[in-house]
Length: 310
Image: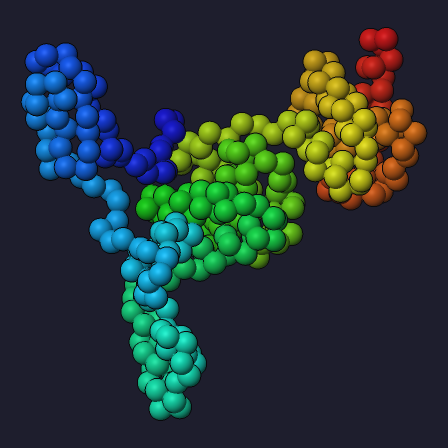
């Protein structure tokens, strides 16, 4: 299935014309009003779009003429266009009387009802709130949050939310965007902060990946090395040695069909033992969300292959 573009591309309106006059091959100058040839005076175009502000600001002015407001954000159901009504102060920072506060309380109630007038908007608000909470708990950036909200909107437009939990779809979107950006986040790690179990997250990701055709490459053990090494406070030498072990495991085919986090933990254990920085297996397995038996199996298989190649 072809991958669908879930993000809007902006159209560049400031396309500059050619720098050569078509009549005399002279130099062309473009200002905010027109494009004119400096040699023959031919006007190539006029009434150009001025993307700049129509106001001017000076340091000595007390008033602020800027009125553009906050930028639009796809992480809110209304993209941040709704008005915020304060509780205790007006626009100039002055305290409000009790009568005015009661009036603004009624206005906030009516505004909240008007913002989510349909079930679709309420579901979108709930889904975006869950996405922002999970992304914040995982320590991901704003770009990941915006991409996840855009993916949730696409899933809602494709009617993928019917009969499914909003929390599961939101967690599945976070995992899908993490996979698309090659971020080492496991299903168990996302399910720890989500309001659903691991099976629900996997099912939601499978639906998104199948129906939308997401470009999700399979995770590799090398992607988990920096995260695990930082969590265990290992030295850069151990980290570089573990990366070399992951490359050897890939060439030998040891990581085929295996949990990449478990293979990365096994490589870190071998690298730490070679460098004299011994790490407890239970602690390493807990950071990688695998069992100690899985860690030992991957370690023994990797050590055996390394001995054969030496």
